Image (cartoon, rainbow, N blue to C red; front, side, top):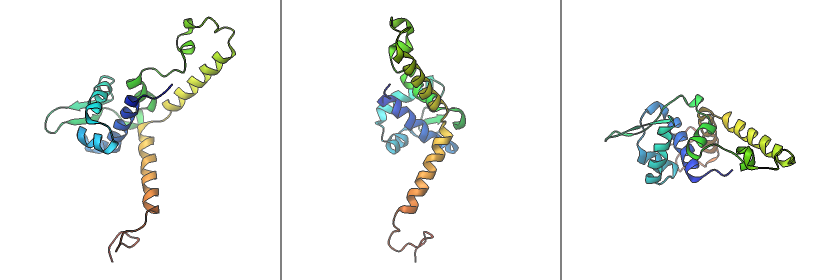
Length: 158
């Protein structure tokens, strides 16, 4: 299983919308620039996310994208699978009839277990958790950056 570029962009888009959920509609251009996603590509990914019920697309001069649900209820698995389809490691686990060796293959059970664990892990992570994690990372980073000229530790000029 490899996360596609579209899947990655879908996750980035929804993470940005979750970070800015209180604002409601966020302009596509802002998301594209902030998350380093080509605007045209973002438009295509957004259509897929909208069809999956994850975002709402608003047209017009005040248009953009809006998260369609509670960030705590949108799992990373749901986002990835909305864009990339069902996650699986190989055809013999995903399509059992495709493998004649399934009943005797010792690796089949390993692939199945690995796939279930991956899906379980992604399903156990929601957008709200990712927002919290990003907020902590930004806060930690801001404490390690040197102060600018004329700034005091409180962030005020002298």
